Length: 193
Ligand SMILES: Cc1cc2nc3c(=O)[nH]c(=O)nc-3n(C[C@H](O)[C@H](O)[C@H](O)COP(=O)(O)O)c2cc1C
Image (cartoon, helix red, strand yellow):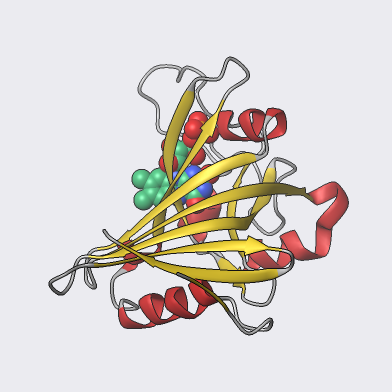
C-alpha cells in the first residue's frame, strides 16, 4: 500500500536528517558510495563525503575534481546510484539520482563557499596534480597552487534523488520502505525486507 505524503515533506529527507543527527559523532557516517556507468556501460563505484543537503528539493551534494573518471561518466550519463550505510544505527539508504556538475565558471560563489568550508588537508588533496597520472619517483607530492582560492578543477556535484530504498536492520522484523516521486508528490511504501 503506497501512501502519498504532504507535498512539503520529503519522507526520506526526514529519515536521513535523523540518521545524520544520531550518528553525528562518527565521521564515517558522512561517507557514501556512488556508482556510475562509463560510456561503454561499465559500472564503477567510489566513496564520497556528503557535504550538504537541500531538504526542500531533495538533493545531496559533494565536492570533487573535474579531472576524475566519475565526472566523465556523469557527463555521459547523469544517472547514478548512491548507497549509504549508517553502522551506528544499522540503516541503509539506496538512492537513484540524477547529477548536476557545478564548476567555477558557472557557479563561482557557490563553489567558493564550499571551498572555504573545507579543512586545509581536504583542500590540499586538490592541489597535488592530475589524479590517476603516474608519480615521478618517491618524492613527496607538492602543492602547486595557493589554497586560498579553489583551483579550476574543483567542482560540486549535486544529486537530485529520483527514488529511494530504506532498510533498517534493527528490530525483528526489519523495516524496509520505498520512496517514489510521482506527479510532484512523494509516496512511501512499506515492503517486506
Ligand atoms: C573516505 C573517503 C572519502 C572520499 N571522499 C571523496 C570526495 O568527497 N570527493 C571525491 O571526489 N573523492 C573522494 N574520495 C576518493 C574517491 O573515492 C575516488 O578514489 C576518487 O574520487 C577517484 O574516483 P573516480 O576515479 O572513480 O572518479 C574519497 C575516498 C575515501 C576513501
